Image (tube, rainbow, N blue to C red):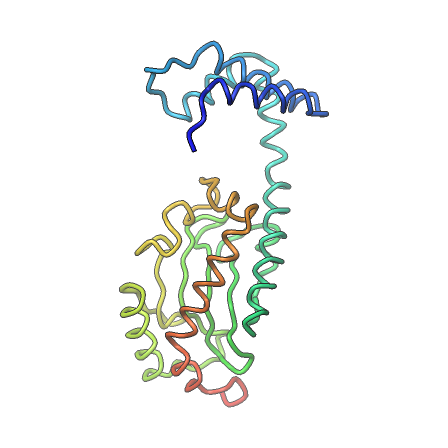
Length: 238
C-alpha cells in the first residue's frame, strides 16, 4: 500500500501529540516539518541524505537524534529477547532445541550466534553465526557441537553433498561440514546478513516473521539431513 506525504505528516503529528518524552516529540516534529517544507515530488534524494539534513537543521534535532541513538542498544536487546522466546516456542513445537549464545543477548562479540539441535544425541547442529562483532556478517550451516567431536569424513562429505544439492554450493572447514552466507541463494535475503546496518531483521523480529523464517529453515534442514545426522556417532562415543 502506497502512502502520500500528507498522510505521513498527519501520522507524525499524531505521534508527536501522544509522545511523553520531550526529545522524542521534538525529533518527530522536526521530521514532520522537514517533510512539509523540503520534500519535492520530483526530488530524488537518498534516505540517508534526507535524514542527515533533518538532523542538521537545529540543535534540538541533533540532541534528539543522539538520544534516539543511545536508546537503540536497549531496543535491540528487547527485540532479541522477543525473538529468542518466539523461536524457542516454535522449535519446541517440532521437538527441536534452541541453542542461544550468551553473547547474543548482550555484548555481540565476534562469533556470537544461535542454533537448532534436532536431537540431544546429535553432535552436529544447525548454526547461525556472526563472522564479525556487532551482529555483522551472518553465516549459517552445519557445525560440530564442540572441539571434542571427531570429523567423520564419510558423514561430513554426505552432509556437504546434500546441503549443496538442497540449498546452494557451500564451503567446508574443520568445524563446519557445510556453511555459507545467509544471503546466498536468498535463504533470508540480503537485508538479514548485516544486522548492524539494516532495519530489516529488527522489524522482522518485532512482527514475529524472523522466528518463523528460522523455524522453517530448520525444518527443511532436518528433512534434508535426517539420515546423515542419525548416522553420526553420539557424543558419548566420541
